[in-house]
Image (cartoon, rainbow, N blue to C red; front, side, top):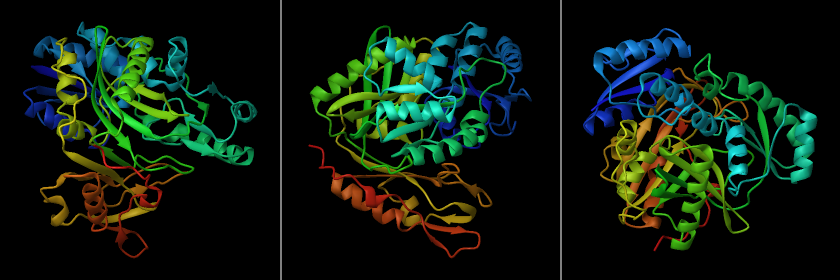
Length: 433
């Protein structure tokens, strides 16, 4: 199968392993970049030289006339809208522009969920500080401040009082204009309002799902527990599988994701869903029209026997993926985003006892020497990912903690130290039965 992947603007090397996996799974992947490096995917990459949607469409049409692609896909949150437009222009399967906007812009997403009766936090688009203060006063503190076009928890803040909201509103208003998730969007296409939302706070645990919608059926392919508690800011921090959710809870969550998919207009799509409990009941945080980020696709394969990448390849060419309802394989996993303080990175050393361990599912460093690491409230850069496996929850937790402590990090002007993860905020989670 010949597939065209789209990145409106190249997202560094972040998606490269996924492109490799497409080839390994039998695809012949070609890559269309609006702005990027033509040598990123040698021999099968074209660069439009502009993030303009019209330029992307023109290049895609000319290339399709020669290659006759079977489908168009993206693994980038920031290219969901551009990909929908390109697929439509080529006459290939896609989710459509309206569904793409609903799945990318958090304000449009919330309004769609509201119309569909999906349990979600209270929300309001807040164009200025007075409206933000009024919304938070109405919803109650703590409240959440977040961008409409964010990703990776960039400029998402928990605020506990009006003074804190005033400070964070200034940080976020300035930050969303320069944050990477916004800068990597295609140009010349309506992506919905760029701004901030105030939402009511949901007080319970969070869970991540890889899911598939296909002609009225909704499948949960994998489920992962978030096992750390956030503070004032939100990191993609520590996750564990198999999930501790009960069958009844999973059934209720499946109905919620199905209703959200219908509300967003997602008839055939791979999806990443985030659910948070509130007063013991599940509420939807977001439903993205692409596989989950980081290493969640690997976690799904190993712990649940579901491959979101393979499913995306099938959906892109209009073929129903082979999928079953969530069924854990028995393998335990725990993964973390590696973080460090802000500053200029000199080096990261991952010792072979970590990188080559039979228990390491993935040890990947994203940042290159010389990179500037931004941490909240200035940004939300991470060093990379570490995912390990084991025979039990407690064994896997201890292994991840030990391996994280072995990774050395050096920032300019500071002594060498260790990578870290917010273990002090680890939720007390019992091993899954």
